[in-house]
Length: 310
Ligand SMILES: Nc1ncnc2c1ncn2[C@@H]1O[C@H](COP(=O)(O)OP(=O)(O)OP(=O)(O)O)[C@@H](O)[C@H]1O
Ligand SMILES: [Mg+2]
Image 1 (cartoon, protein in one colour):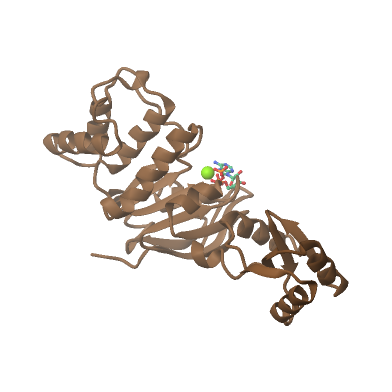
Image 2 (image 1 turned 45 degrees about the horizontal axis):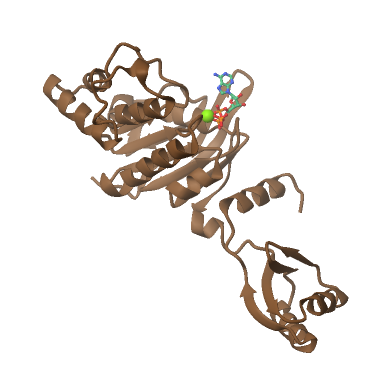
């Protein structure tokens, strides 16, 4: 069965005593790749653990691939591969192959199936050659890949990776994000990447759900989240740049230079004003438009909006 929406939550809340984990979360998670983005303590892990039935919601409901988290948790776990946030306690003397095959058995695979799937999964994450090495000899980056292999062993439809790049060096980080991104295309998996690193999400998924203090701040295609929110126009000119900038300022506009661009705060008829001023100043316009912004910019804006800072 194929799904346009993989996960829905309705007014989902989880309190740890009086501490808010998440509150009144109602989301629809689209198929494909989705980033759960938010700073520390935003509620990402709480939501993930609730969806997996590891913790119970205080209030509200959620469905994963149509299954209810309250009554169908085994069906849900069969269909999710989970890479937990914190280090898995590996048995140092166990080989990678044994460990992943063991995970396969725990997920209900037969002995033969689990061996085959363990081998396939370890090759997929790039540890095929090292599959008979003991886990105790693995680097942190390799251990993260083992965690990914263990999430893949039962061939689940959804992979949820909670901060999978934590502690990795730049190379390890790129490899891990590539693997997670490629799962969407190579293996037709739905992927949820939870991260406080905006760059990680941008590089891995097309869609993001932004969390803050247990609530959802925004959600949408990253392309849409990052466009149309710019409050300034970026301009580049040849000749008489200083005169052009001064004329704009004399017209009462807010102007500054950033990253090699002249930025002008948007206002009514701004386009006309900029072109006329450039003409009068003898400056030739070489670039005019909104520069594409990173999700990081949007993220900062979202937090500003929330805090009431304009
Ligand atoms: N077991 C727990 N007991 C008490 N409070 C908890 C527990 N787990 C999480 N919390 C609290 O719930 C809130 C949400 O935490 P959560 O771990 O879900 O956030 P997160 O977005 O995953 O953060 P991080 O980026 O640090 O992993 C925080 O205030 C946190 O302190
Ligand atoms: Mg977390």
